[in-house]
Image 1 (cartoon, one colour):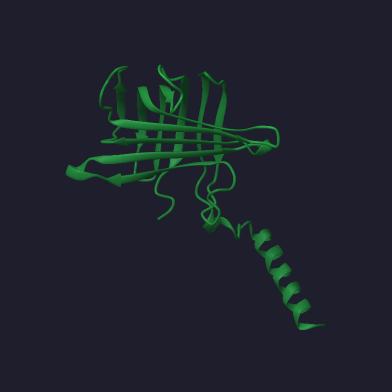
Image 2 (cartoon, rainbow, N blue to C red):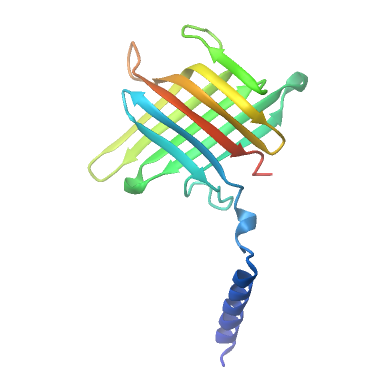
Length: 188
């Protein structure tokens, strides 16, 4: 038997043996399961569902949701939530929510407020042969509630109004309402 065939056979047998043991040889590259989901309506209407495991080697691929917990100044905590939804037709949606001073509880940004303790960005991009468009929504107003915030996980809900950047005066808007349940610090 040729050396390359022996090596290929040995690799195939090792993969079968690992599969039989129930071990996933790719597990170290995958973050724990997370999800971020919401519906949106207004200028555009649809559903966002980012549910899955982030592949650390290919973060731009697939559908997933994760979070990051960091210590801020004065002992405050910062929570960042990221979600990416991939669909057929090359449609990509991206969600980012960040709250400095995060804790279990709720925080509200009223319409017309000049400052807000949290930010949110939602990107809706379509890239098809017949259509290429991108809409970025930010300047969130509404309520963010955190129901769980541990070293390894964050969960909660949100009901927000986001304004479309560069859409005129008054800017176009969408309303988003949903939830998140994400593993934290998966890129460490």
